[in-house]
Image (cartoon, rainbow, N blue to C red):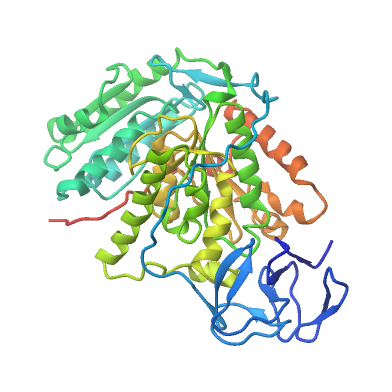
Length: 499
């Protein structure tokens, strides 16, 4: 295994695949040894050609920042000597996307998985009962109901789950609307064979208003309970769950075209290897699904800053281009409204892992979207309606964005990580390690090891392996660690006044 990797022939840096000490030597493509001027941690950058103060430093073939000082070859490049080159707003100009040469037929076009076809034609990969509360005041009530029902009906459905949240009361205007839309989209998710909506009775998010947000629904699939009107809300809720379980049992797995599958794309706790291993791997799987007629959903808008023009260049048409521009600029305005620096990113964990600037993080992050044309841009809390690659409005926060991807309709979320996290969303959340050390150390968190790309396995081989694992997962043959551990949570984006 090589001790370093260069991602593009024009790059000014190579990435250390192992820790280096000051004085160590690297032999580059040119054959000349490069003596390291400082200790360099694994996943961090080594400069291979001189860069003067104010000049751009290239990685991925793009600028990842500007030198704060003159930097000599062999130097460790990080936050101490390089800063972001991003500032303010950008004027974007539409250029028609260059068509990507499509394959005549995808070898996966006839591929199927074993899914649940719902009465409205939607397809689920789990046959679960979900309990959605309209307001945070009854989180514990719903938790007790879910725990009791999960034990009662184990084996009859794939589980009974509740997703705690603190909102639904004392919210006003758009903030309340966003909560309603997000929760309503979860109610409509096809992984839930049946849904019990539990309200308190005095909250702003009243059940009658929430029904309008849910839209047309089957009374057999969605039940409602107002806790303040029930003598024993837990007993009444368990009775309604029993009705939902009886309804859910009519659904059995049957062959479904892989084109019905929707993947959410997410990264969290990224490191210097994210843009080398896990994110490109997810991009390859995303492209493969889209070629077969399926859908992939990319979010984390602040982590598109600095790489947004790559996505804009792949807009399906000028209307979609305009939507991407609004998506980016609206999120920048959100930062400004709260007197925050637009480009205040990456996180401390990202920096420890080797990511120095937001543009470096973004150029790695957006690789999860592969090379497909962007077909649509969808507002926060709403469901995806177009097949192909979609951009979804949501922040970079792991819990909030995975929840938004799930509400958007993702059956599975592919979650790449170089630092590790146990978190899981409402849907199966596949943790993909960027490095083998993490995969070996956190086997109860990590579902797939993309670090094998640095150990002799080809991208084609690993793409096939991850693809087959996803088909098995969608068919109920396997579970993710978050499912086995019971880690299924949500978080709602908050941007407004609480009374």
